Image (tube, rainbow, N blue to C red; front, side, top):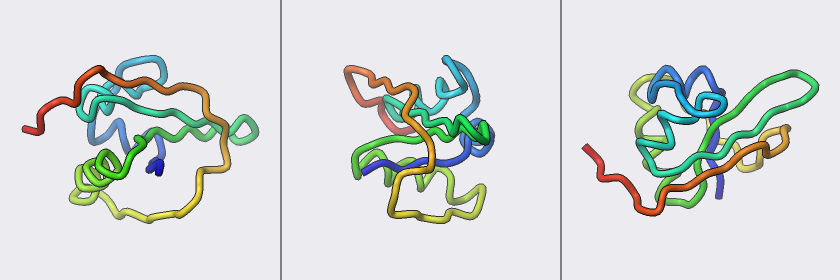
Length: 90
């Protein structure tokens, strides 16, 4: 399971940093995945695993409308990273 959102939306909630802006999300959740559509240039950042996805959505939900899609974005995977330990929730 992978949950993603547009880059601008995730940066507005978690902050920027990292290679393409995934640093804030990676430090908050313990990892991030980045997809980019080469034709349109659209960039999506998200997480994998059901527990991470639930936490990701609950962080975004109070700040913006969430639309769930049951498929991967029309983009290719360009980067993923994970921490050795899951950070504690504040």
